[in-house]
Amino acid sequence: MRPSTPIAFLWGSRHAIEAAARSRWTLPLGFVLVLAAGIARHWDDPGGLSSTRWISGPLLVSAFSAAFMYVFSVEPVLKLSRATGRNLRGGYLLLLGLFWMTGPCAWVYAIPVERWNDPLGAAKWNMTMLGAVAVWRVLLVARSCAVLTRRGFGVCLLAVLWPAAAEFGTASLLLGADLSISAAMGGVRDVPPEDEFMLKVHDLGTAGGFLLALAAGLTLLVLCRLRGDPADP
Image 1 (cartoon, rainbow, N blue to C red):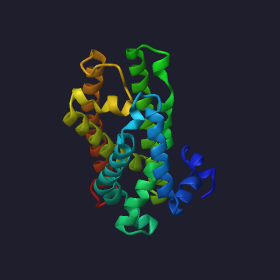
Image 2: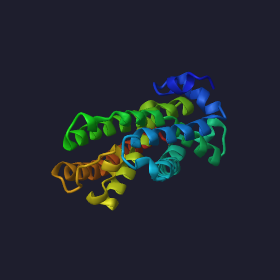
Image 3: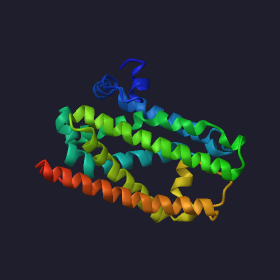
Image 4: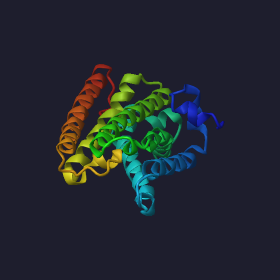
């Protein structure tokens, strides 16, 4: 893997994706990138780096997200392991490594918007960046799956999108407004969860996650049936 590969990967370069899929350094490099993203999210948070959650949180959540996506959608629909000549475990580790390679997208959270805005204004900026980062990472993972499996980008996007949206909606529902997953992921601080804006963000995240998952999942199912693909999402 060349030094330029991680940068080119962030822009969806086919050569970078293929190089990352072949390299044995993808998983350990991705691990480092996830840790660096945690630092970017908490560097200006008083006491944020003193807790181990900035390390364990992103790693555990991303490992679970990649497993959920792989087991329930990417492998049965896209057959990533078969396309890349790996076993099921190898296919998961490949997806996890590519998932972790998107870590630098989260470095946008390092922008100290709290220094230039009041708490509510900063929260709005953080939510905007959260949405942009989420879209960027989903597109990158879908693009990677499309390159490696030689499937259409639309099908790959749906296969990645519905489990990601379902997981987000479920987590938002279970955690509730007091522990808003949107606020935690976006690094929102100094705005109480009962604030009207944060309540709207929570409600939108929960409902939007489920609706997006349902729409993407049903569309994927229809496409698989129309193409005669026996795999179900």
